[in-house]
Image 1: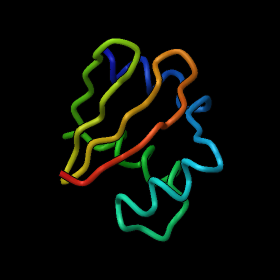
Image 2: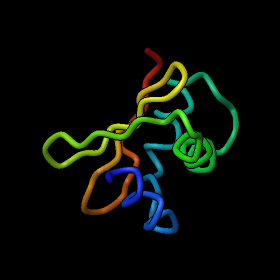
Image 3: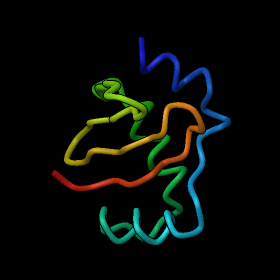
Image 4: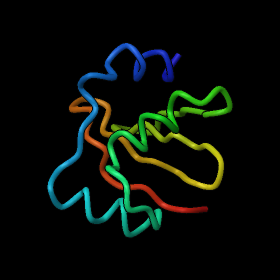
Length: 79
């Protein structure tokens, strides 16, 4: 259910300027973080939960936090 909501609003998913650096640093990636996180969301094995005002996408070795009202990627961490 939550995954479908995020997929339906995929064009709204974004991050802030500060979020770009934070996500790249935390996930140890050099690519554009929004595209990276969206590709993770689209994976069949991605599990999405909602706790309070945030969605949490857990897939592979990372956990991505997305605000449920603004669809802003707040942060992401390796597990």
